[in-house]
Image 1 (cartoon, rainbow, N blue to C red):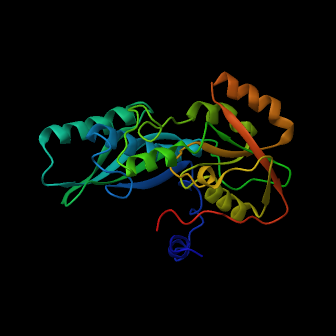
Image 2 (image 1 turned 180 degrees about the vertical axis):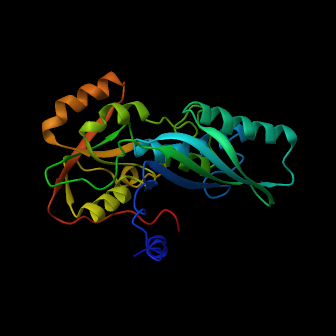
Length: 272
């Protein structure tokens, strides 16, 4: 058991285990976005940093078919930050949140040696999509293309440059696909730690293994921060699901199916 899972195991709550905590019809989710861990200021403007931090957090709500409504911000910022940079930071939070109907209702700010952001998103879910629900025989798929995030991160780490509209900077969330296809989806989550790692979570909670139709390269399967949707569905709903994907202009890739055998994650833990 890695350190992250060991730590989480110290808390006993039936609400732990999904992208957010479902309490009644409300979903509560929180993610950190820290300088020198998730980004460097040399890579992104203050506007881009705030916009991505907000989108990363909203992604958890989207993955659970929840409607994000409110956000609480915690921003630790260096004393060297200028008023113009602070304005750009605020504009990034506001505009990124507004795209999904999110109102910023409060939070906290402190002085720090670097720029660290945590956001709590409060959402409403009438028909939540959970990680639990997969059965043997269900098909596995994901939205979009995965692997680019790790590739672009490597380029940045090697002092290279990426396009301003690259996936590393601009996350495309799949809210229309999830909401329109919800009745066909048995299980779902966002791909934040990489397909292989996130399949490990689905395997543990559903007690299933996976048979893949095509081998996925480790560098693609371990690429984190993709923020695509990883989901399972019944074979009988394949035609209807593909139709909904086309209607919402969402590319999807069917990668395999659920089987009775076990599953082993091939990636190292991302968070430590």
